[in-house]
Image 1 (tube, one colour):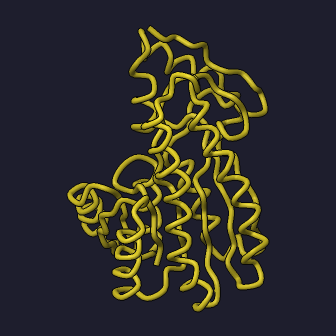
Image 2: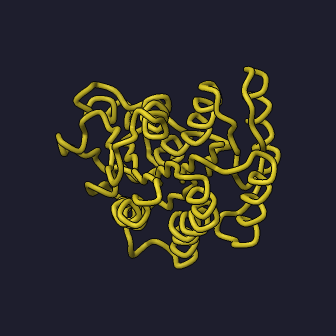
Length: 256
């Protein structure tokens, strides 16, 4: 059983669909119950198995209920992908306290709550794989993403700490740091620009591989980390960024 948070759209949805295509039973956890069920319907139409569990991951009671439902129906959760996140845009001093608090509640508190609910069952079942979806912004600085970058850097640090805490119990913890990925979050980020299409072309050009990443690029790495083929991999952060963190080039700020 694999649980993917924030899986009603974007990267999370892509990971969930890929896991299901490989034969995993997948828990689709997101805020919107209808959106969760729509993903379940897609997976089942393709011959896979999934269950919708709508919840706000920053709310302890909702997390416990969602995890309990999956555990009762499918047994132990063997794979957890912490993907749910929000991304306020702007320099730190222009980030509202409301946006900052929501960022911390979802990106960090939510990860803590889901892990705390899932890990005891993983240990009892003899082990599992936890994958935090971090970001290249947690490694290099990108314009107008200071608060978001802070939370993603924290997930990379959390990966290392959790890998030492749970290795003896057979629970592996790794993180994946996507670069610029062609996803709904990217298009929302560039929407405030005067020329979004020009910025997207700039993103393509600044990657050594000549393009932004696809959701499948991220899902492929997550599939590896969830599998027995990664049985000796823990505490690692995998950058899926087309080489941008090595090249170090950044897009120009094109704010209106």
